[in-house]
Length: 120
Image 1 (cartoon, one colour):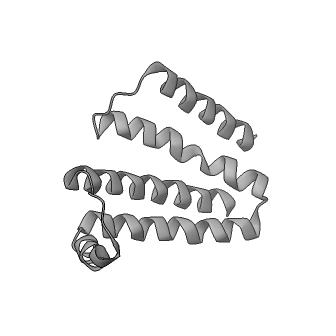
Image 2 (cartoon, one colour):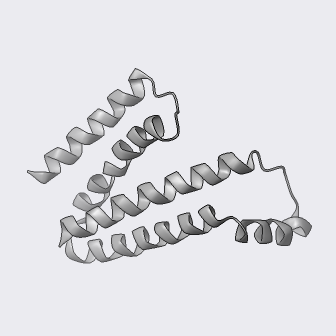
Image 3 (cartoon, one colour):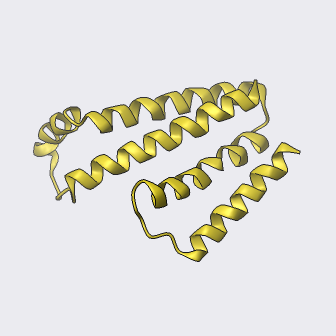
């Protein structure tokens, strides 16, 4: 059960982060705004389909994490959910065409090793 929940958490986190990144790169830099422009910002966000979908996936990830905490120790749940870092690094390179230097690959590799240790 805990590995199934972990798969949901990691998968939904990765999807949510990727969709959020794609949408924010489409929008570009958000200029500073005041309280009077908050309504305009919220209505603009509501029209962004990828951003809404990203929030949906992140909500699923959150509730799966809450459930995971009811069946597994925190010392397992948090480090194991870091597997999303590895997948996000790979997808950032392949799908988003981001530059990932050797130091980031090494960091993702160390995270992968840590998650593998948890599986033992």
